[in-house]
Length: 439
Ligand code: GAL
Image (tube, rainbow, N blue to C red; front, side):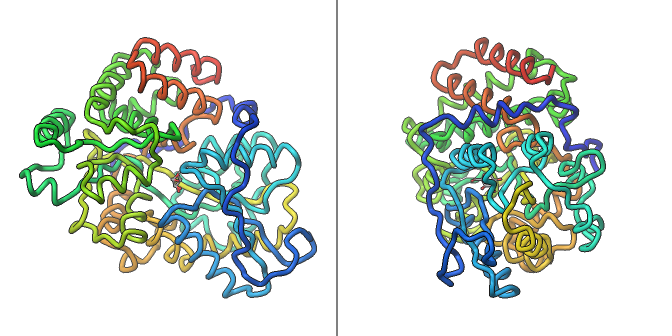
């Protein structure tokens, strides 16, 4: 077991303004909302047996995982109508703003997708979530979820959400055919990455697919490079306010990130994360850095074989690190159907629920007793790695820092991608950290 097992980013000042900041006009509104039960009837009555499930899972793999979970829930409780309130846009790029509007209007969904860590804590600190201590006790969840994960879902000894998955964020996916054709090995260090990228470029192949229409995709690449350069201890220290944002390692990581941009597709700003995965699947690019929901997309949506049609390795310098992205659901204050939420959470937290959802989604179960035989070779390896690797919290996926800091970081990374101005970027991060209580 590696030394750093702590995922919590420390005592950060959480500002609800951050959530509100994402609420400005012009968001797409609810998309893809549809009754999943097919049982018809009114969807607005709060007395009917129904539940509104809010998420951003509309893409291939993600939507399938959610459907499997809902199907299982409805098998156990056929009388409940499920309203699938999924808002399209990876990493909640649209959903989070819609959610913030609903929460501030006192109209919360019955239950909603939220990342373990600071993103959940923002709602908890605002008094918007109900504790789930007795449900945890009743379901013996304290024995089956990793303690570090429960800590990320808890405040002052009370637990506020149920985790459904663990995604790995530091994965480099590659097209096996291209790598075989040019006799290349998947890079494990930055030096190897640039050697491989130069070789691919010389063959006329786009080395790295980037798809950063929603900004977070570039932030994710930056945080993976940051982890690879800093290592888990320093990476962790940064989010705890113990390492300054002008540390030479942060600068070096940012310079490396900028260097990588020389190897990406020119149309990256027009593409969403699935498009980046698709480029690798189609051989239009050789590599892509993405969380393992991309594996769900490859296998569930595109029916590709892991290890045959596509390969993977950890992002450079992170072979023994696991960038944790965990989705959870809770019970907001004012939810109209608390009993149905409790029943749904029981399914979501159950072994059967997690083993139905995660094989389609690309993730591994948050429970430690998932059945490995239900998972493919990629996920079996991820399950092993999760037990021994250093676990680090993702910034891009809401765990490491407050929503307000993440909004600022996404904007700064977006500007960096077009200007490549490292000094300006580091200054922007430093200011955002000061404003949001990281330092
Ligand atoms: C993450 C989320 C994953 C996946 C991904 C892409 O934030 O944790 O479950 O949905 O976004 O949408």
